[in-house]
Image (cartoon, rainbow, N blue to C red):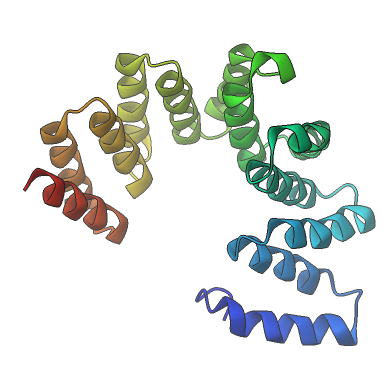
Length: 220
């Protein structure tokens, strides 16, 4: 049910498991995952906090706890969000430290340091540090991270180069989608259409089909 994204049905099953045996870590994790999918981030945090307490050496638990917290603070005032920021950094850093090949935590750290204002610890240098780490672990993810950073800096030629490299080494729907979105951001719809079509032909992705259809509607 969970893998098929039938989250409400899966929630009932996992809740029953947890109610009968609260030591079942997979049930706790899935309850947190489902809460995250439902955008109930504070609830997700409560489950992931339990996991971190029970297994503090598990990188993925730290990543999920820090990630849920990061999504939660995006929906509250900046004043209230500041008190959570150190915890977000701590848990994402722990995930990266505990697992030298943890891709998701490094993506999150690179994006976080890129977007944060300097006054609260934002740093393009740190963002690029984690993007460099990603390049060594998974080249496609490294190129995507650099694409995000350069887009944020509005260095669109370097962003384009990074996304093209990501397509070369990975070729997933996401790589084509992000390059197409970059072209749309620059108001280059014909280039975006071309890359969406190319990606769709190669991957048959529903996501790219949607992007292509939406762009065609705008142009028509």
